[in-house]
Length: 184
Image 1 (cartoon, rainbow, N blue to C red):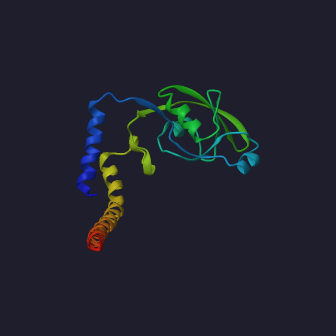
Image 2 (image 1 turned 120 degrees about the vertical axis):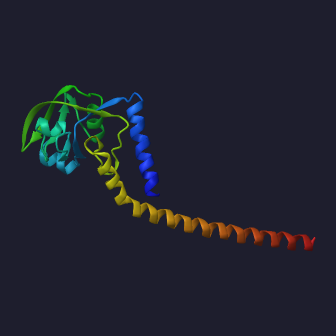
Image 3 (image 1 turned 30 degrees about the horizontal axis):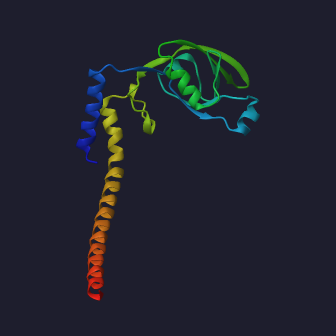
């Protein structure tokens, strides 16, 4: 994919976000991991999600959540896995919540306000776009450009090879049809 197309795509996405009514969703600002069975046994918990990273200046950081915390509940609702965590957070933009977590073997409650972001903001490849400028996003995407160009070139070569093979097969089929007609 050419750099120009990436920029046009980004500009289109950002233009849409500026013009249309964008739905909002809650945002906490943590990276997490589901607890494996051995982890649950070792921590003596039945459920929870391990915090593996906290985004700088995020609601989580401002509220005091730390790497290594295990989020157990949000407003009394059990957090069994990452899907539960996402759903509970996304459905509460700008709401104050009480998060029950396990830190260093002790249960702790933290009150914080869930952040807000547009539902359309991409969250793939570890991009935390609410806190990135357009120039930083362009720079980040530029790192992927050689990878995508190589992929496109590879698939174009394969497509050309397949087209040539189809052409040869058609010719072979035509010859076989002619031979069959001659035998009749």
